[in-house]
Length: 497
Image (tube, rainbow, N blue to C red; front, side, top):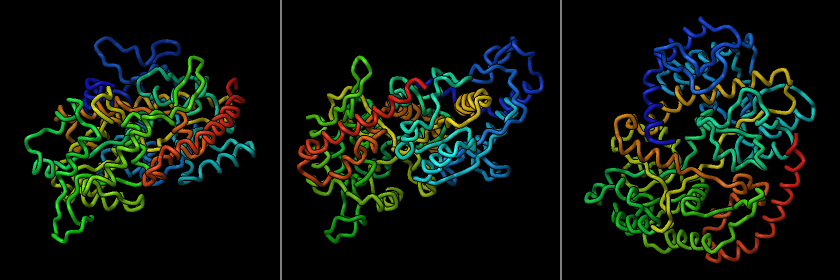
């Protein structure tokens, strides 16, 4: 996705009201079956949808039933209840409008049947499949905890699902191809869920702290020049420390350059530094590559940053990080705050008087060719259980395609603008930086499937205090290889389903 594409999305969001009028007008003037598709419009009119679904679809009010691991506002990517769109939340309003448009367009009823909460979705689907029940049409799983449903044989091959076109830009071909085995997609993601964006790792920069110390430099220029590296992070963080209360104790009451979580954010730092967890050979076979000199070098540089850099970094426990680091950042006592895009939705962040910048996490060094970002391990994934009725597959496919397509023009741009405090549509530098981050997303098969390969997801944050990291890699290599072998054996069973 490039800058021009995102700017078009913002324009699309601003024209949402016009689009809605056009959608309902089209619903009242459907063409005869077999004539025009959504990609074909009358002369002088604009195409209303990014997909190529036939304009004549009408499924007679069929209910499409969702089950998701998400709870509370995280479920909003699926459904906004009547009345919830009037709370002043522009994201809720955009999703409600999208759902109304899809239901009218396709003649369906989008129904969020169950919210299981984290770690409870897989057991619910396991129970349903074993009972051969047809309770849900679409499953929304947590990438880390629920990806296993595919290796259990519980999900349909989405590549065979009618009315879905995964070559379209509103689907994340990168992510889906990385987690697929032999090009079989059991899970899908992209614009269909706001969680694809909100889970992206990034670095928030406090503009007041930056300008108080580094007014002679521009943070965007630092990134664009390619000089935003771990060494530069260390240098700038050392220069930002200040003992605010004069007690000669470096703690959370002082001003720090950098706060780091002894938890999942370390995965973001590792990916950003070019750690490669696996490669694929010419036949598509997966080879674990994380036990490398570069991985060790990255770990050593992070270790030095955290433990041997004076007061450059405040390292916080996983359960303390979110609240403590956030409080320091909004109170102008923290220069660099690594987190995810979703953090920008926090009420305290939204209420900040101080402006903030969003930039990628730093590269390993200036020889690294490009910035790399990944996402928190809970990216929402959409799949279809094997127990659904074959007669419903056409409707399910059309629903998923429309959700992804129409979200890309009616929901995603609204969220991008909100993530940058309504600056995206008027600040070219912010827009370009957001594009840079989005276009740098990557993941690896064995990372996403980590819990089935031997706990690889925890590699960095379980061992960040262990100075003998090389021995840790050597110790677990055989475990990972065996775990991958077992996983591949299970996946092989379902390749031709």
